Image (cartoon, rainbow, N blue to C red; front, side, top):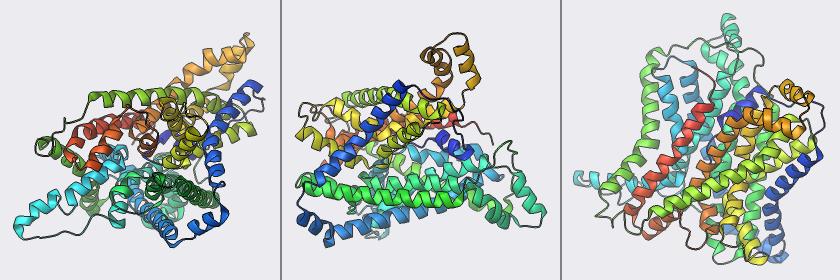
Length: 542
């Protein structure tokens, strides 16, 4: 999942097990609209698979079994495994520290430790190359001390480090949400029976928060598998980078590699479902009692140091580098050279348009799955999540194929780009809409119908005002993630329609890093607004 913002409320819904509980049959019109939305989301995947089957079988087998392809597969799987493991090892302890201990400044640390999620990983990669690369800022500072060279930041290690720093908050927030919804009396009972804090955590807490950990780890794995910017900057041959390169030379090869990437994604989803099924729901239902704080004692200083180190590496480094570029812009080619605020306006316009379309598409799906116990409704909801799981570069390539082959009038136009964005980020709007619909008291809707309202009128007068906050939050999430989307924007951008993302990438490829400063800081400022969405929707208190 590339550069996607975390939806805390959707994870909370998983934690509390909210489900529609009515036997009422949904209107046929609602079913039809939801089915059309689901088919539209699935269409790009079908088009890409059809394109891959056009390649001669012998050639396809030779390509997919070649040593270079197997190397790409091994690199991609290894990167996913390392980043997921590292993010879990980092996110779970930090979540426990901020949710269940007497850590000083817990609220401040919670926000600070979640903020790296709003930094696009490719901007983090820019910063790390500039700071720790062969000719980077650190090398310049150490040169007078006789340090002639530093270990290379490029390669697998650099990509894994950067990705971990900017995706571990998925696990951190997922685990923390699970901890806050867990009944602490279970832990206290285990302690009363003689278990130590560590034993009680292992025997009681861990099994109950495992679904939250797994949900966060899944998002990390999908992000690492679908990310394009970081592996490209760090020179690691994974599927996304090779697909982008092959797109310019052989679209047949790009299509085949995309299908292989889809298969790897399916395997990741299957493994996650097995783990989730084995762990069970794991969450307490009914009334939840807050836990007493675990006293850190002598561990307070090491935990504070760890929190400070993580925040410094993930936030201070990129902000420092971009500020350095901004102040030294004249020496680096001038941040204003070639930059226009029109690019920012284009980014906002495309993101706002996408958010509006996504909300309109999400309403029937979210309302159907949240209001009615319908198998088709559940299928429609699951289908929308396909776009979230499929890498952006794969969706973009599928739409390039359709645009070139069947709809030249739409190729490199804003409607096609917006459609790609909607396919990618529709689940964010569906998830927040559904969770809001589930919480609407059905008796209010039934009362409106008793007074003579039709189903549509009852929705407009009763349900819509009650779910408006959730719908708005979904729109905000779609807007903010669209602002940061890289591969789909690069492949599908309309002619003469440059955005902040495309300008940043062009400046990077040209080597004019100073020109990245203003658009990068602008993008970070807009992206940081997603934290307001998370905080506004987090109803738990410390």
